[in-house]
Image (tube, rainbow, N blue to C red; front, side):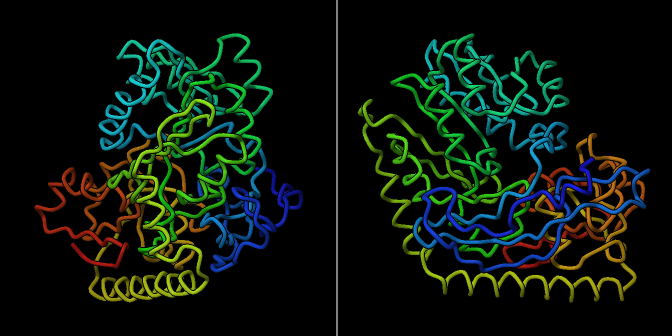
Amino acid sequence: MLDPQSAQKVPSSTMERCRACGADDPYLFLEYGEHSPAQMLIRPEDMDDAQPSFPLNAQACLECGLIAVADQIPEDFFKHYLYIPSGAATMHSHFDEFADVIAERAGDGLIVDIGSNDGLLLAACNARGCKTLGFDPAENIAELAAERGVETHVDYFHPQSAKEVREKRGPAKVITTTNTFNHIGDLHNFMEAVCIMLTDDGTFIIEVPWAKEMLERAEFDNMYHEHVSEFSVLSMVKLAEAFDLEVSDVTFLEGIHGGSFRTFMTRKAAGYPIGENVAKMLAEEAAVGMLDKATYDTRKAEFDETGEELRRIFAELKAQGKKIAGYGASARGNTTITYYGIGAEHLDFLADKNPLKQGLYSPNTRIPIKPVEAIEEEKPDVLFMLAWNFFDEIYEQQEAFRERGGQFLVPFPKPKLV
């Protein structure tokens, strides 16, 4: 658990410069208020203790389109981590497809996955005969990866650790990071480590949610202290340029985390051709108005309107005597219920597949987290879809709930009962 005194040691709650392109004065467009870290779930014995909390402020760089919050979390926070991708069937199929892409790029070279978590992606690469190594600071998650036969170097990825691993294992032909790059406060330090680790003709492949999708749909639930950046393609292009790299290709990933994209960075000297998707997605960002203050003001108002509509729906359901549970004790879900003021008076419990979260309580709101089986045991009438980005998968799984007339309350892009 974080030391409450650490709240006095953290840096400013707003950023003076963009962490991707370095532009001054990112535009502060959304102040969420004070939040405890979204992944900082509460143990039963700590329920009466005060949680450390920090201001959460979303800022947009009007030079590159990066949407970000200030990095305020002490470094050792991720030594024990609670998110694992293997809990979602969608991620199994996604990583299986991704492993084909990686294996083709890597050949017989080394693949290094940064933020390798429980080894789901590298296990798929291993099944294709690849040479792999994971990089992750969370010791408990590295143990889960080992059970899959995935080797993990337990440390943060930075220039010194990159040098140490390169000396032992040689350079990496492919470096990957999936939904991890958005957790990095010092991107330039991270990129320096990538350049140390990567072969001259190697590829750095990044998967992250696309800020354009989040902005266009006003889905600002995905901002939290541990998830400090939402990237645009333009922010990736400008970041790469600072390290003599270039974005040689991008791929849109429609069904992943509410709309993500895969970026391929390569050394300029390697001479990779630039894929046509790069210009296409840059044009889409410009059309949405990612460099325009007014766009952010409009979308912030829509985000707040979503909260008002949700509170209205909750009031109606409660007036009808309905029992409501949340599905997914996710970080984005914790941002949603904290910002919108949805608490234990609205939700009887949160259901989550991840055994690491079960038996704990949500930060800020202190709602109990139970196994998914509790849905049939306690029979709520409505499931509030905090993990709405996996709604299709969850809808199919909850056949018994649907058959007895259960409804799903989906918050984004607009609240609706299904």
